Image 1: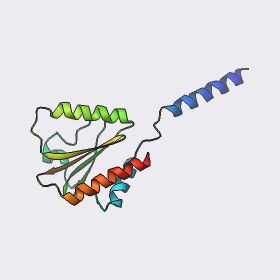
Image 2: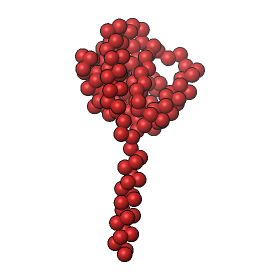
Image 3: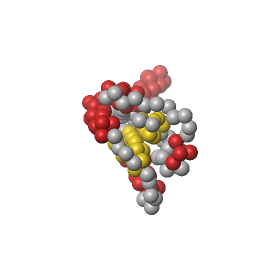
Image 4: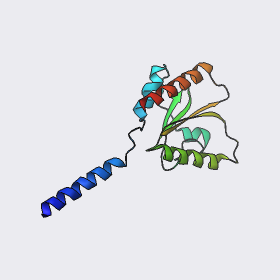
Length: 143
């Protein structure tokens, strides 16, 4: 009888543990693959992005540190959250932190469970913007 209870308890734990994960989560690998499909190549930065722009970009948002790259020699930050709700909280935190700041020019891109900040400063390359929009559109197909 004890074995039956132990088996049922173990089965219950396994079932409830699996329900907590969002099957629609888009991974960093998915994002990078989608960008590469649009011929957008990310590079590893040689110096810390935070050193360039202070502490505005590159901060943790809702407990998540960004994956930091360069796109066309400009900062490109990718935040991957466990869920869409966590992403929304991260964006809300960013907006609250920057509401009274003069921030350099950037574009913000949102997808299911992630945020992307492309800090282009002054000149936004139209072909990169178009490629980013297509890459984000392709990400929705992963869901």
